[in-house]
Length: 417
Image (cartoon, rainbow, N blue to C red; front, side):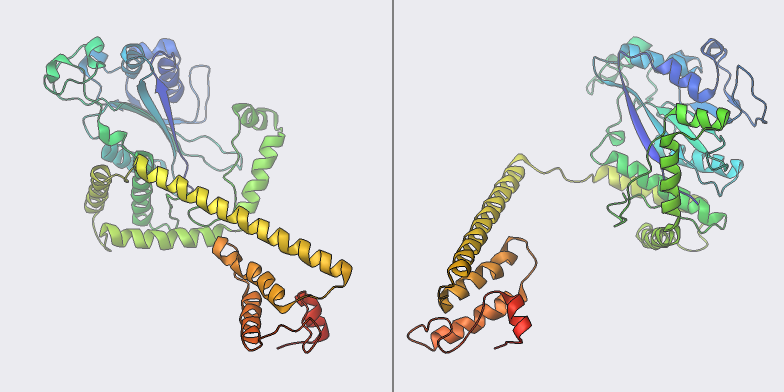
């Protein structure tokens, strides 16, 4: 069953990760990267020291001329020339649906990356399909991408990664597209991934759907799947050993499977609402559907979530402080009432109706501080108030009417008003 996994990792300047990341996702040793052979591979099950059997495809797009078609040249230059503590490049790791074939998943990945980066942002990606711990396939892609924009101006690496000069673009670096880093950009990317994946699943007749929202937002009471280290997977694959972490994951998956049907039904209903919002209709071509999805993405870029002002945050903090102070006062009132009840219970002294009403008021007022409504306390307050209004002098407890504050005892004795 299709599940969403979307992980974003940011790499800062001054590191030494670019060449290693390109070598890892392309399944090529570092010394082989200089051949710059962009390739599409459909590999068998053989494995040697220079390659791994899980690579299906790898290629790069939109690299500037000075990179000479070599992704590691571009991303290593980003690490070298970006300013101190600035983002050099970003990596996405995205799961692909098991329901789709290699060719269908490649088409899905192409549509996603084209919608995300078009022809103006450099990126390289690799499609992996290793065996998963449950024996099934685990198709996913790694994408290394840059927010720098190709604008037709010829720049060498040292200038390419300088700050953009809005007044004289030819003097500064290539612009970093703010659309890829706006408030809410990560969720917008998750939303677009789910939209495109669901369209492809629907096109190929599969019922599975993805939902971009978190488990908490969907009202699902379970934790995300625990993360495994490479050593855990290696132990299972090569030594047939199940580590404690792997066992924990197996138990988590077993529990999740018990609710798979309900979660998928919820995801399908969510997608039906999303289709209406996007304006997707039965029989619409894939190109038209993708166009609607890209338009929704553009709208998310131009209308990002509003960031609250400092004054609004201050007001919220003050309101929260008042709420906490009110709750602390309420707790003090409850404790005082409990002490009074305890003293009267120990002394067997009289308990006046006005005191009883005030005690019930304390319980009834809990709703003003976020506690559940106490309907019985409200009822007693109203009855005692009416009774006291009709009597100029308060009788002592037991004089003409016997009422006990402890409502458990009232029920035991069958008493009522």
